[in-house]
Amino acid sequence: MKDRSLLLLIAVVLVGLFALPNALSLFSGQHSFDKAGNGTICTTCHSDVAAELAGSAYHTFNAAGNEKCKVCHSSGTINSSLIPLGNGSYGSSSNFSVGFNLTNGSFTYANGTVRTGMVLHAAVTVECISCHYGVNFTDDAHKPFYDNASSQNWLKGANEACYGCHTKVNVQMTWIRKGGYNYSYDFNTTTGTLSFNATDVTIYTNNTG
Image 1 (cartoon, helix red, strand yellow):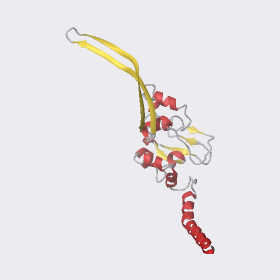
Image 2 (image 1 turned 180 degrees about the vertical axis):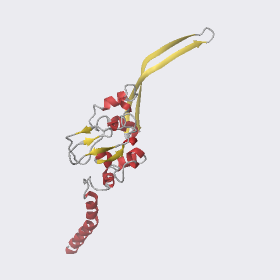
Image 3 (image 1 turned 60 degrees about the vertical axis):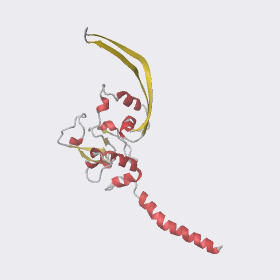
Image 4 (image 1 turned 135 degrees about the vertical axis):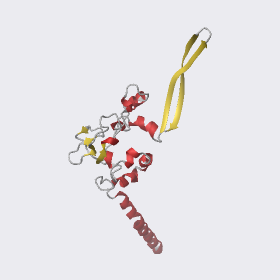
């Protein structure tokens, strides 16, 4: 009995020697977002996000140094010429310091807008339209989808609409359109008739972007 207890104790100690250092290295400094190279720490938990953005030049390679996550979610500098046309900053010769200012608690979006009184936890959530303004146009086909997503509280602003098509999340949609139209034309008399089928046709989709 004593031998079994001794073996069990040795096994627990050995497991602790191998597992505990790994746990400490994983979580030690996990939320020290002002340390150099923190992008590596972020991807420990957010590997899915890192994989989605791996091929995007604007979201990764154009960030200064190792601040690929920090440039938008904490603090960093991005050249304003990299910001898409539409927010009034394209072609500017200066830089915007975007992200969180740990000194005064303000947050600067990529379009230069400053918000104050922000409280830092681990990182700052950013709206996609901080840089991508197209969905704000009144004639944009995505506007109804975007406006409806604004009422959701899962993500910042209406980011749900952007995630629906631009990431690999599952999307369930119901499309309702008119049945179609009938058109006939007589080339000899240059006359024609056009009639619409006003019956709604509903299509259900369940896809991954």
